[in-house]
Image (tube, rainbow, N blue to C red; front, top):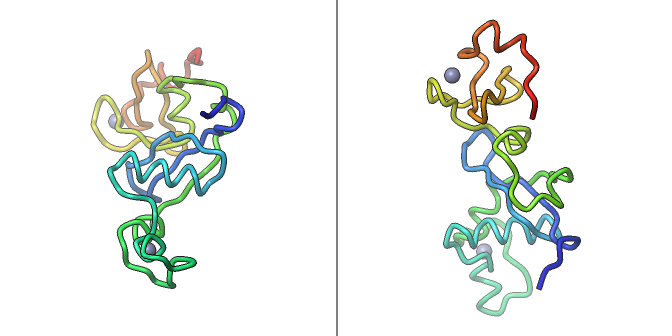
Length: 134
Ligand SMILES: [Zn+2]
Ligand SMILES: [Zn+2]
């Protein structure tokens, strides 16, 4: 059983994609394993499952293939937050804008308005200036 203190919060996903997800794990490796398992992918390399000591270079099994495209970043603010709000998640990953459907991110000026993600282009001037409580 994991206790809150050995399950760190991570964001795992493919760079420039929308598949980022908050997962928990004691290590980056474990976080990625959990991410794969969530998607129905066995995180154990097929070669390792067959007895190899470690995954071969350039292994093309589903676990290794998926793992190579994934990135994991730590989200220390969320370690003790069991169900983060959209606003907290939006700090870490791109999410679809509730108005135009395009991907929004903090970096392109997006923000959270009344719990809805709004991209930089869709914000009204008033919204842009207003400081929303998080
Ligand atoms: Zn493999
Ligand atoms: Zn938008």
